[in-house]
Image (cartoon, rainbow, N blue to C red; front, top):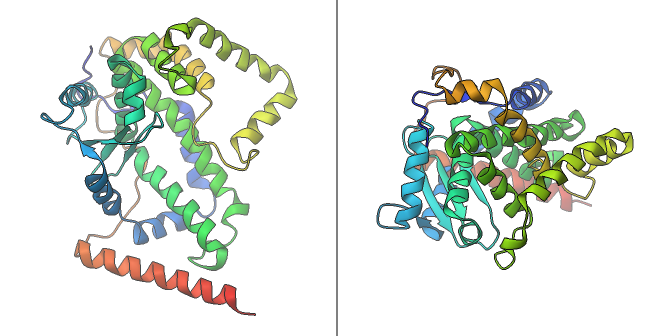
Length: 323
């Protein structure tokens, strides 16, 4: 499998990812959320949680998975090496978290559903998120949503964030970021079918009936899904389904849409040039740059953040209970 020494994330980043990030940054309220995120958020508790509740992968722990992981890290030229955890979770899923101490989590359900090539595609996808610098924006979105949902507009100066469209912009960017990570998976695997097969299994895969699933039919389904746009009403429904029409926002593009975008890129001159070694090298900036002050004492800073956050929550509760 190919190794892309010195490759920059800008070499494979999807233009819709770039465009969605630019839109997100321009929405009123983004700078406020960025400042408050840096002030109140710490990735350390998430790292501590994984260390306490998951299995850290290494040379003597899930050695096969660790070998695949190390090869993917090498192929995408990621340094320093992130950590990898296996979580006992039946849902076939994975995630990438952190910037100062980045790590990837693979759910055990995913390991049971996919073969080794498909697992490699998942790992490369998550490493693509880290390579592109997606994790800071992703965590910022999660933090902002939880804060707004729990405390409302009464604190942190978050008034009118929902009406400003910031949350909508966060979700739109999150979906487009997946397209860049899918490209990272294709670069590492260097074969489109296993990547698409992985997508199909994550959409509705079954260990019992896996031999009856047809990738060709799934590809045809993705083409039929694109044809739905010929009816303007279907386009409206798609937008609503993505953006709260079912009571929640969708963080990932529908899988058949991801298949469509990746198939187009696999036949592009851009992809061909990268495979031939003609790609942008490191030096381009990542997907996000949130300024932060120099750390003081980590433990003391985290304690103060938690105390301030709890004080805000208590004040909000007191106000909500007033007659």
